[in-house]
Length: 430
Image (cartoon, rainbow, N blue to C red; front, side, top):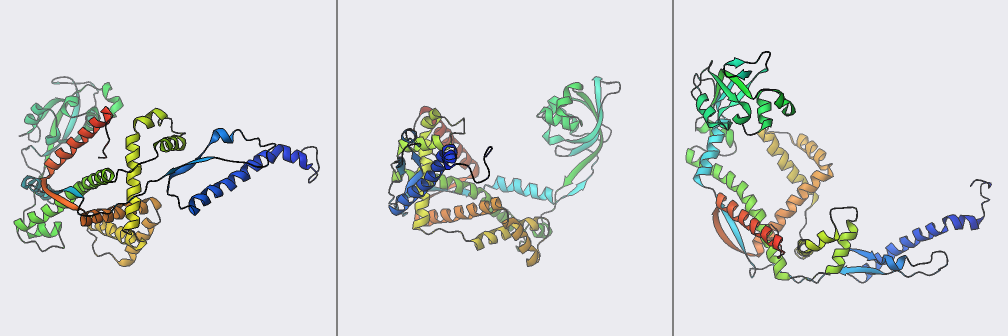
């Protein structure tokens, strides 16, 4: 310190300058251990973190007191006595894949594996390539106006009259169009004529488009060659079997959405069945304290939306109970196996099926080094195990539902729940 030789500063000065802060720091360390040990020794199941009584703490005389007393408020979690059984009935939607969905999917696949042709006359789903020329008025090109060559996808145009003009077009066909009215947005209009969106108003919206060439995807034939390309591991020889294969693929995708809804329904059911009582006053204080840096999460907002917070707490408690009771675990080996499965699927899309195990292991190692990616895989596997537990233990009231009807049902329920939220009624997770 200035004015003193090293090691010769009087202890009284050091204590006066630093004693209070050192004392407070050490007391806080002792407090943290004491509170944690108290909770552990008394086997208390608490919510959130203990909250200190700051008003009483601020009254402490750090300069003169030699003994200190601190007060904490804790929120005790409710006791849970829940066993999954067939006494709990939950609606479960089995998604039925309608023929029209398979038809559209089959049409898309045939296009994907089809070959490109250049017909002489355009049809509704063709792509036209040509030159755009900026116009002063109809039949009057703008002096030194903007020109640009690009594709025009007839089926995606918004202007129905323009569509009719381009269907039946040939190389050399010329049409005038308002590029903003022709498509869905100014962003698309700007991209079509090769300018930036913010510069679009510097150009006339009227352009002439002259067709130079027509491109059409000739759909692949429905034969064993196509079946093998799409499903190399399956022995598919007929169109009927191929359609069944596609329906199964689509069904898996749609069923995944239905399972997410099923999990939400189970959450609502179990939260309602157990009716766990929570320390509301403590949780409101804790939410406010832990989010004090979040200006959007005010005391008023917490009070208004507490029912949603409360149901989230209840579900977390129930989930932890189920994990412990039914010993749900995800092992590192399972995570690595899931990562490898994902990599194989990705490589297969690019035609790489017989990949050496050594290379796969290297890919797995790289992804496993990313904690965020590992957490995603872990959460996915955990959800699958939890879903399997629900399907095994609960009584499922199965209903076969078309996907469109399922979407309508979920959308309607979501709207109802939003309406309940707005009126201050009980919130249901969706």
